[in-house]
Image (cartoon, rainbow, N blue to C red; front, side, top):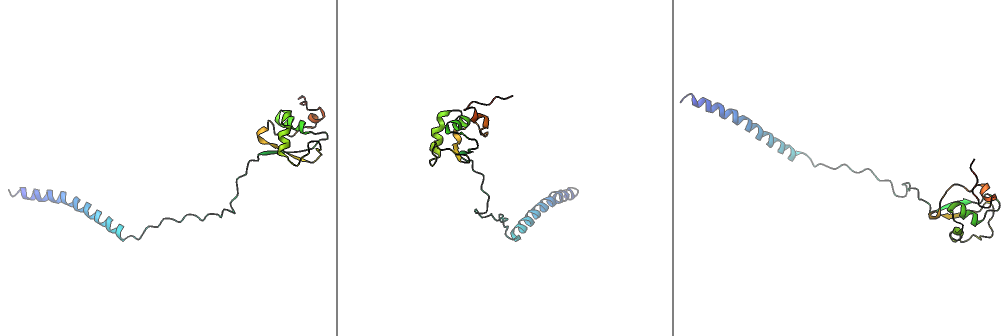
Length: 137
């Protein structure tokens, strides 16, 4: 029976030491957490004031046409940009200060974006041809 006592002691030591090591590690970790100072979150970067932030470009509800050629009319402008001559009235409504019978060189005329079929500038040949599309060669 004497031989069994050292075996039991040896087993107790072998099992007991890892348990003691694990328990002491847990206790040490908890103590460190308790003694650590408060954890602060990093402050967010200062925001640029709203007045200084660039605004995204706004999509214009109009295309601005500058009268460039002699004999331009709202009829021709409507036909070129919208594909429909009858849209001249809608264009006139979008330009309340415009007299449709007095269109002069250099005037700027707003064309509602929802009517547009093209944004290409109206060519001279279109005006001189009375509204017929120029031939592509």
